[in-house]
Amino acid sequence: MFVDKKIKEDRLNVCKNCDFYRNFLMLKRPKWTKGARCGKCSCFIDAKASLTKEFYGECPEGKWKE
Image 1 (cartoon, helix red, strand yellow):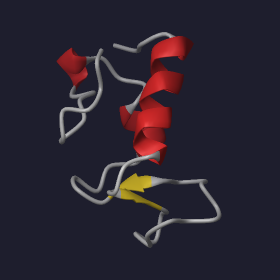
Image 2: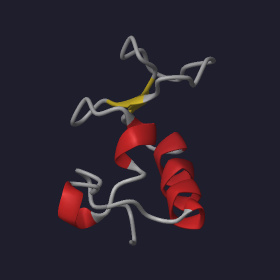
Image 3: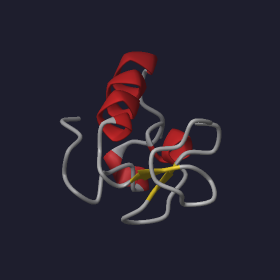
Image 4: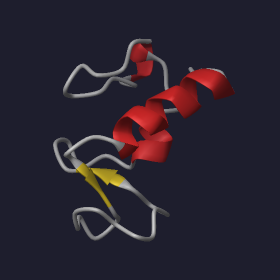
């Protein structure tokens, strides 16, 4: 159900450099990253990055390797 910490960190780093990275208010280029969300699918990135593919832990842009 959950991926290990290294995979989660790698996924979060990919997200932080993505054009769809938003804060919880869906604002671009947030200074405060708590509650960061994806502008493409509106998910909370920290939660989704923790999940395996079987539990819908996939990037909507296909940017995550694992």
